[in-house]
Image (tube, rainbow, N blue to C red; front, side, top):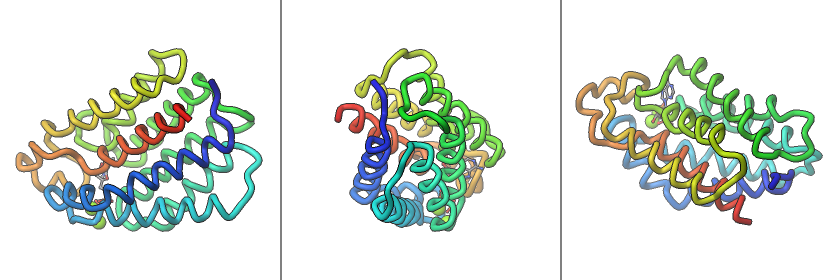
Length: 204
Ligand code: ADP
Ligand code: MG
Ligand code: MG
């Protein structure tokens, strides 16, 4: 299967629905090992994103991703805005020129996104950040040959849950040192919603 322009817009609508519905939960995760604003940051960022996307007509998926990236970068105060912005911007650049995004193209986009966000956050795997979910998903997509909603959700959920036992060494959570262990990373939880929303988009 392939993702078309309207699928990409639907993806962001579904992300926004999940983020709004789980705003309090995301904030509670960030209260434990951060400054308690992650739910607010995500809710604002993705609401602004869907507002932007619904106000315009798009000819290709890359432009949808680019506008989403720009909106997240400019509207979200805090570390997560520029990081998610980088993810969608790198994805946009990687899929540019494709009318439809097939599994292979999406996989390439994910790989670029992971490289970009690691560079931007100076983070690598195992540091209890959203990199842990995105990196795992890039590997997942490389191993699969077509979109499979159930597998996507499962892989993202596992990756998110694995951040619980990690000790944070990047971002605000790093100040909590050993006390960061035992809590799910807020940015990884948001990332899980992004992939769960992708799964819903695939299911149609
Ligand atoms: P802030 O920490 O500025 O308040 P948020 O609360 O919105 O921003 O986002 C925090 C999330 O951002 C963390 O849970 C983590 O996943 C991610 N994060 C923070 N710093 C980094 C980094 N250097 N690299 C990758 N991800 C990071
Ligand atoms: Mg925060
Ligand atoms: Mg903050």
